[in-house]
Length: 314
Image (cartoon, rainbow, N blue to C red; front, top):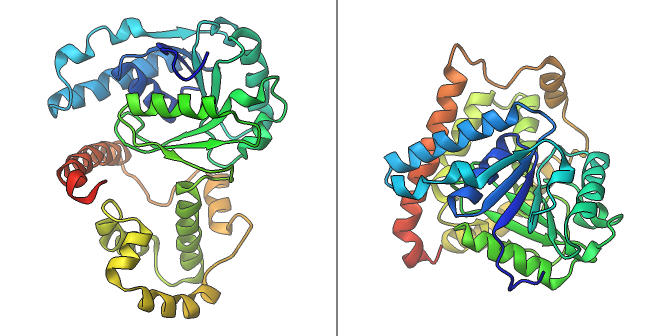
């Protein structure tokens, strides 16, 4: 299969929140989806997610009711990886376990055609490391989505050391068919682009809480009311251009030595994960309410971006 072949059927392996969003995105744009999860209840959850997401899109006039017709038939769940042989492209989005991912790839390689591209949604494992034990290394790419996958324009594509051009081109074409604006990396780097920037912010935020500079809510508020106001329109380089490079250069000299360069998991994160608690204390349905607000907000941001995409070439 080359990049010019018409791809109609895509496999999605892993149906957590991200996998559900990816499946929703694919069926929205007309692909047939063959989905697999080790957890049988994920089929019902994914179908509910897709139906709910489509309802919101129809209510917001993003899509019409007729555009949602037939999605139930285009989404097929299978109870074994061995039943994914009809896939023309595969997206793996399971947890960050090297052993689990390699086990999945071994099975998938045995059932799909040899030139079917296999993509991983990994957030932090090297693409070159993941493809190392594949029989056909050239067909493997990184394809990193952002939640909610059916709404955002984000998609990062990364080659591994042995990835062929046709695999990257196939990933790019699928992304564009899904309404994405694919970002193409020149080479493999753990975390890709957005995650490396995001985790640097998260590390510094946690560092300041642990130092006692401010509490969690205060740091969140500061972030929202500054970076949150310009980041959708301008990336960091455009923002530095617009607001003064000499100023940033001077500040960098003073502040860089003061920033956290911790390479270990912060104690605060260890405590939250081990205790099963979160940064905020959610009462009743408050967490679900926040998830709904967040989804609505993402839709609103999308409408604002459309207003400026021609002017700002977004």
